[in-house]
Image (cartoon, rainbow, N blue to C red; front, side, top):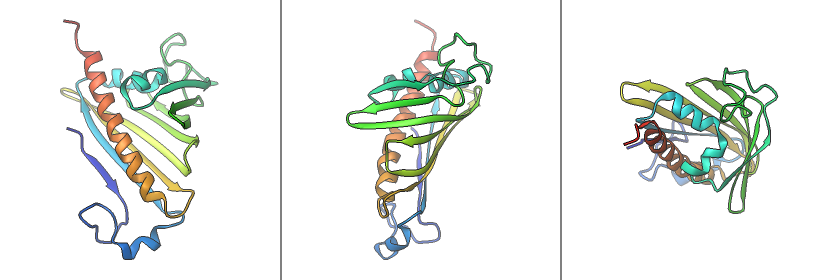
Length: 191
């Protein structure tokens, strides 16, 4: 079972619902930074998980996303050692990927890749957020891979950060669980 850690309002007592007391809401508006930190363990290998992350076309299969379009291939597809003909080879650092779900569009750019260990991306447009960055770190374990999906951001519209923290926290929890399960099945021998 994955654990979800959502941080907000450091140094202020947190209510049972996980949000700050109403008296402190005014200090949280503006450019307050929010963090979402979601974990899951997969039976899949770190390389399998990494390949699924890198290949945006697989995301609608294991996440809540509706569709994927590669808007701009990476200008340096071989940089992290993946063969130019491999799945996701054109989705290296610099690639811009567009994900759609209903009316929502999310344009994201890959900014860091560490083969078998990390994929990082930033949000270019789609949600009213500033400085959104997500780091997906993979740690091999004796039985598979620990997946840690951490994102940080600020809300463009004051007073809405709590909503996006809640909304994206739920979405990323579903996403990391879907990725962990799918990678585990993809790594299992055919039987």
